[in-house]
Amino acid sequence: MDKLRIEGGHRLSGNLRVAGAKNAALPIMAAALLTSEELRLDNVARLADTATMGRLLAGLGVAVERDGQSYALRAARLGSVEAPYDLVKTMRAAILVLGPLLAREGSARVSLPGGCAIGARPVDQHLKGLQALGAELTIEQGYIVARRSGAGRLRGARIVTDMVTVTGTENLMMAATLADGETIIENAAREPEVADLAACLNAMGARVRGAGTDRIVIEGVERLHGATHRIMPDRIETATFLVAAAAAGGDITLEGTAPDTLDAVLDKLREAGARIETAADTIRLRMDQRPRAVSLRTEPYPAFPTDAQAQFLALNCIADGVARITENIFENRFMHVLELQRLGASIDIDGHTAIVRGIDHLSGATVMATDLRASASLVIAGLVARGQTTVERTYHLDRGYEEMERRLASLGARIERVR
Image 1 (cartoon, helix red, strand yellow):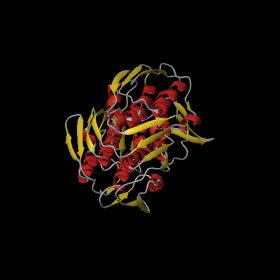
Image 2: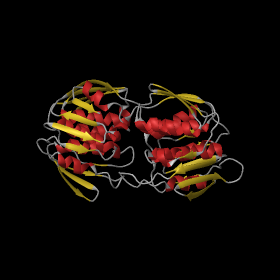
Image 3: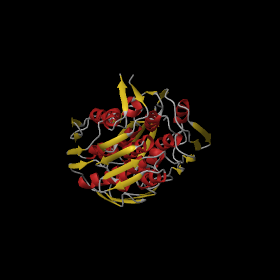
Image 4: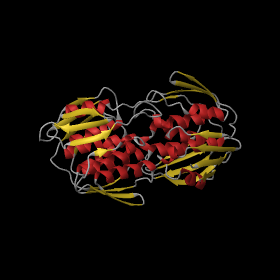
């Protein structure tokens, strides 16, 4: 099993291009199921999760061609409507094939995702919305079995979700594109990745408006066609590299990113003492001092993202002052705290709040990643710790970051992968 070995204490400097967003690529890849024509995607990061989605689509009968960061997906004729447990258990986003399969094929059999290291993340809102669209749903032997009632298309409906759910919004939006009539999703997720999916669907001939707000309206059409779409930049990867430079110190410029999707993160970095300049698709961060402690609360977009919480927690470990980090999205998203404490961090947990008392330095040790973003926080901690840090279970990191060790090394970090 691969490990990362990090020698801490080196500043970061240089330029780096941001990869395509994982959380945009996965639903957009699933959207290929909605048409028999080819969907071409550019700027798809080379990640374990995008590879898994490619395997899942291939298993359903989609012709999948990959060339670097480009995919050509053609679902001319599907041979299966089942997403098996072996794939779904490794990537919960596999639930995103449920809506497209049901809308186009009239049936779907998708494994329940099961447990997750960072929380329950139930799929009840997906099911509630699909039922409103006319689906008949049962749970059989750990699988969601969905069928259209009658021989016709799904039917438009007004759906009010009980909670804000990103994948739920995306699943329902895709299903509604081929429904008969108008669908309105109230309390929809506002994340930029939802808007990116809507842009791709509209390029395929869908009629979606309001994506990026809490009210999305979809006018169903009889069929969608092929299209070409470029995946948006990854705002969480952007945040991770910015926090790494803020913690380790230095001067980095990130290119090919989207500053307007990161207002909450950039505000907190400025509060920590970083000097930040933005242009249309670049962000420059300079940090020449010890960071100041910054408190934050995670909330749905456009507030502070839960996927950047762990990285800021690592930053606060060596910051000047005391910070309170309140996690309001996932109930188990402080599992990295025990590993940071192995490096000497002073952190106390009070319910869903972490109280972080910054110390002068961390000390290198062997730590174990527990989930994707936790692994990023441990890498950041390793960059600032004295001595050598070894991060085990790098497969978590590989799910969402493309060759992170190589790219950090290009900025001056002393980091290598041990196979």
